[in-house]
Image (tube, rainbow, N blue to C red):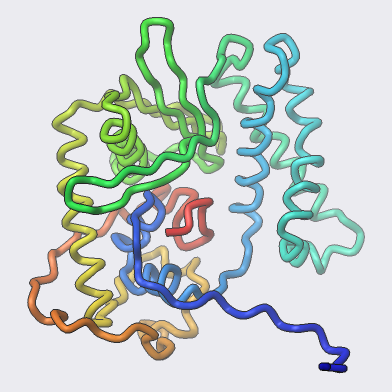
Length: 317
């Protein structure tokens, strides 16, 4: 019997080959292949961020608000839910307490909660929850394309009109991007639309991004079948590039302004670091296929979104 009084240290997640694509991980690879490797294959830990954690709390409030009858979905009611959702999240992920470890008086935590409450309240200036009855909230979707590529993700909200038209909605706690930087966020929504289309044969009528930061804003897009076929082709090329990098171990960094928010600078060659030894054995056909060139996403203001280098999303692969 082991009589040691030391607590066991949880084992780090084992490295694994990629098995599926989510919008977040697809964006990671397009932003920086080495970042994708660190997150998906090496599973290197990342520090929790106040912004990403606040986004998680706000999403939880906006999801659970619809549990109440329509007349009770008010801004004061939603604001009052913020501390409770933070407490629930902290119980599930106690490591988040380190965000405010240097805040013994609780002043910074109070400001952070107030900022979350402001984001929740701003939503009421953009949508009227008393007139909405979502068909689904936090809907997990997954499908396998004919090529064998598995796509999956979580959709914040699915609205279905009485006429059967479908609207996919995603909440963003950052500021709305300028029009020239809207392609990145819309790629995420087109990804969800493709999954739903291939899974259920339903082409969403509208894609809607609701931005709660700054003065708020709503970005909408009406996809076509041609749009989604184009996204599918892009994802197949992207997955081919990921498979090639997995086999060869050639994960190259792609420096952009987003590097300033990356947790992995210490092991990144662009910052004088050395990546950990590659944990996967190269495949026998590593040198057989050409590596497709995937264009980097926009790196200007607002391009990082909620799932950039500053923090991971709810999707894990």
